[in-house]
Image (tube, rainbow, N blue to C red; front, side):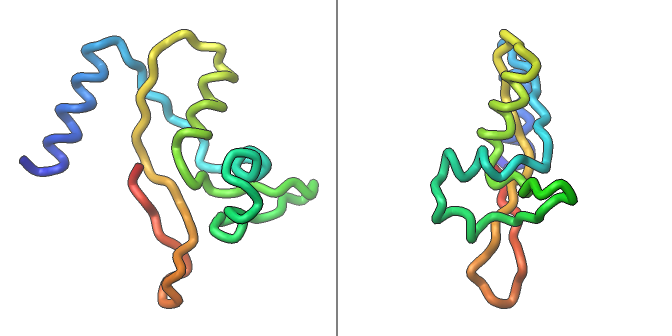
Amino acid sequence: MKSKNLSEIIIKNFKNNGFVLSEPDVLLDSDYIIERSGEKFRSSMLAFDREDGKTMCLRPDLTVASCINFLQKKSSSKIYYSGQAYRRSNNKSTNFKKSKS
């Protein structure tokens, strides 16, 4: 079975069991990630400073972004999520890689 077909079956199963798709923000406050993963993780984040001095990053995983989204909506729904996460690569020939989570 191809991975796309398997993915569609898994998503259908989530929907049939009352789960709601969580579509978290792509940009996160970097402090959330540092608190969860530690200061050493900072070098692998794709981050930038906003004009107000706040450091933001592309989401390096979907869990933190989905949890923030879930808590802000104060939802009691069961959620599932899908999408891309972003991390720097140690490979010098690329600036970043997208990882499917």
